[in-house]
Length: 349
Ligand code: SF4
Image 1 (cartoon, rainbow, N blue to C red):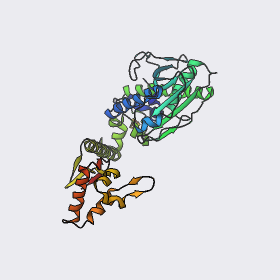
Image 2 (image 1 turned 180 degrees about the vertical axis):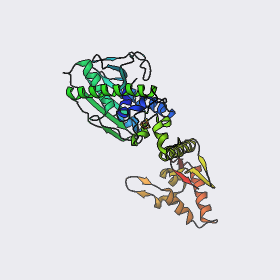
Image 3 (image 1 turned 90 degrees about the vertical axis):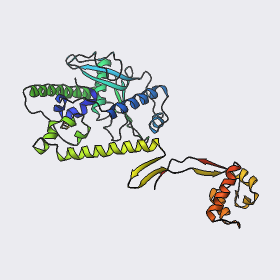
Image 4 (image 1 turned 135 degrees about the vertical axis):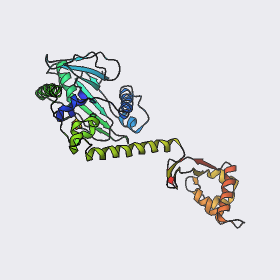
């Protein structure tokens, strides 16, 4: 079954639709789906998570009547579209075998509006060129008639909260009919690929930079054929090595965030930078009035830890500078004049 999210890649490499692992989902993709669902729900209710992505999406307004994760089917043979009864993510059980299906992230059917939310780091095609969004544009035209002006919007927000709102695009009905023809040709090509496979013939697999987004890459014969001897091609091996490195880095980062220190090996230790000290000037001056000349007074009195350390170092009492600093810190801490806050920095020792 051809689904909207697969159309952009299928238009480049139609043979992938008949590879065994086509449509498999990775753990990372499943995790991404959960976050995606949470963000979509929040865009309607305003209850967005307090994360960079959540804060960025709080600025987006969607049309009235918008629903999230609406499954639709397009029947190319009868020029019809319909909303599928679905429970859960990408539930296309109610679709007929020849229908094309898709789950619209944000769909306001009465307003003929479709929005797509992407949370990946690689920028995807804007709504003017985005085949996945055009699938929903076509569905809206088939549902509401050619006179209803269709509007498409792409929102992409990365992990740092950088939001790209592409301001939308309104394809004409003529453009949507052309897209209809493209989908019909795509479906024919996929049918042909199925026959080729049954006959044991080579598939129309088109390798290129897009392969890095293909879920069938791990069992793609075109990649395996790259060295001509059934071994993995050099680019594939390099990609696997990079994937392993990235997975190790993610695991290391997770362990680091869970603990206060992490052993990097080679006698190197990553540690959470210890606590930052803050001085309460009123309490410090109450405990040691001699600190008063070090407190800057304009509208408020402030006293830095650096100034306190300098004062301690210069005291004409016994011990080393370090001992005098530590004694002063202890004294002020006991008097409630110093408190500590944890930092988010890390250091390698
Ligand atoms: S890995 Fe590339 S060539 Fe192979 S099926 Fe995917 S897109 Fe096509």
